[in-house]
Length: 591
Image 1 (cartoon, helix red, strand yellow):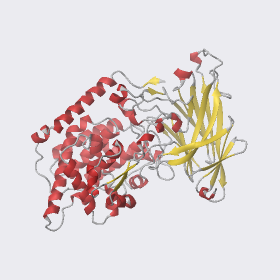
Image 2 (tube, helix red, strand yellow):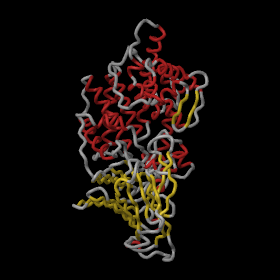
Image 3 (cartoon, rainbow, N blue to C red):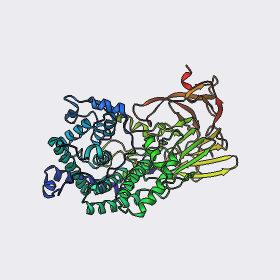
């Protein structure tokens, strides 16, 4: 297990925190706002970006009635729906979602006129439109700008008639949009590295395109966006965070910006088009048969409709491939079955604040849907689940002595300064692939337990050519270079977990050596292993969004010896998922 925090991280984080605090202080007293004139306010936008994300009528109807269900919590507005802005929020995550306005499209889907949605925006402007340290933080601000611009016609189309109040509120929205854009331009260097900074650059570029008369700002925004794209998008199309969600969101944002630029006949750097050509195949790489994303490193299933709308465009090509060497994933597909294996080190430094201890975790999807999953995460889940699902035990892989292959920073001054980033890494994570006529072998190894327990973990997975046989082997071995262990009598407890999708029904055989699995379509699979008796335990699935869903996990336990090559029990466990065909009706029909 290697350290993931460097000494230089502390002064860098401290300086960045001081810069943010200084910026907040200056803006709080209004010094910069008074020194910088906004200039002429446009009458409308020169382009209305398409919104690939779809609104939900049911959620929108609840919001229009004053009930806000966000980030796993619910809050009712007391005095009218606009009164939500004067209420204390139940959590920081709720506040981020509320001030980010992602729910605005839900309101638009639920009402024809859009009057109530505009009133909510106008009430926010009255309370927070000048500046607020939280609501104008780069994370929240970039989300709000993107969502306002994607609701362009709803918010910024010139009102008809001569209603003076409507005209005044319309002008106030445009003025606030300009003010937020100018602030984001100044605050972009202070944005946290990773997804947030990339979204800030995308939002600034989109605003520069949509607002007339902003040529200078647009030029600077495009330069910043190109820099972040080149820096954060890997050669294989993955993102530095290694999160599938980051890939999908970066692609959708970039296509949105590209489409607006094309409509305005504004030329973008060729590097941005090349980034689309890298991102699209990688998004397809992470897709499962249901159109959603596999869940690794803080991302959930995502918005299927939005991703499909982008990937199915005729001008976007997305070839298929099996190994993403820079992102650290192996993919095998055959006979309708897909295996995705995490064979990379988690990101380090500031990029690891959302990272999971998921070395050698895998997901298995069949032609009938998801079978083996990781617990996953979605931003609308209750915050008290966040840390638990980052642990190795929340993934379909092996844990030793119920510890994670990578550890989070413990609560204290270090975590307060650096954030909830990873303190340790599983060390070098190796990967190997062998394709043959009978099927595909995927292999990986990591040393996350070597320093503490003297053992390395190796996993091999075989996917047969017909997709009906998935075999695996997990081994714990002592590297030869480490010599003999100090205590040959000690035994280390391990558990191999296979988290099942909530739709899968599992029945344990009487001898506890196999499990019958039935998917919602009625497709049957059998799990078996050559290790200790199998156990079925409770699990939870969060990748599909709130609320958390109850699920089941298969657990194989054992006690490993502190020596050996992992070529025999008890340090080696072999397991298999084998297709049985259709079993009765849908899984929901079984008691």
